[in-house]
Image (tube, rainbow, N blue to C red; front, side, top):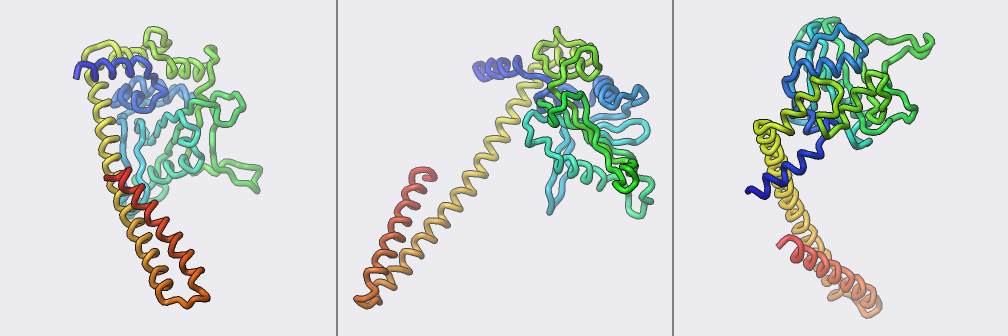
Length: 287
C-alpha cells in the first residue's frame, strides 16, 4: 500500500493543468480561477461566474453521452464548457458541435420560447496548435454565406485555445504557460498556482489525488473485466460458428461423388483448420 502511495505521488509530480483529470480536480467548484480562465479566453472582464462544477455528465439512455471537464454558469445564465484535450482527435470539430448541441438540449423547459435560449460556449484547450497558424485563439461562429458571412447570431460559440502558444506578453500565453507548468512555484497566476499547490504540496491535496488515482484504476479494471467478458462471448461464438462451418463441409464431403470429392475435402480441411485455430486462440487467451 505504501509503495502504491509513493507511486501515485510520483505520478502527481508530473501532472499539469493540461492533464484533463488534474484540471478537473484542481478547479472543481473553484469560481475565481475558472473566472480568470474564462475572462482570459473570452477577452472580457465582465464575466462573473456564478457556479462551476467538474466532470458533469449529460446522459442519454439511447444516444451518445458526454462528460464535461468543467461546466460553468455565469450571472447572465450563459453556460460555458471548458475541455482540456491533449490528443488532437479528442478536439475534433464534430465533437465540438456535439457538445454544443447536447448542452442546448437541457436549457429549455417544455413549452418555453426558443428566444429564452441562453448563449453557450464550448471551449477546447488543445495541447497543440489545432490550425497551425500560431494564433492564441480560434473562434468558430456560424455565418450567413450570401450576406458576406454576416454573423448568424444564434448564441452558440466554439473556441479553440492554442495550448502551444507561449508569448508571455499575451494573456493567453501566460495562461498556457501556467497550464503546462508542473511546479506551482513557477506559475504566473496566483489563483491557479494556489489550487495546484494544494493538490501537490499539502497532505489533504495529495490524499485527494491518490483517491482520484484509485478511482481511475478501479474504473479501468472494471472496464477491463467488461471487455474481457465481451471478448469471451465473442470468441465462444466464433468457435461455435467455426465448428458449424466444419460440420457443413463434412456433410457435403460424406455425400459427395468422386468427381467433386476433392473440392469438398479441401473445403472441409480449411474449415477444420479454422476451427482448430479459433479454439487454440480461445484456450490461450480466455481460459
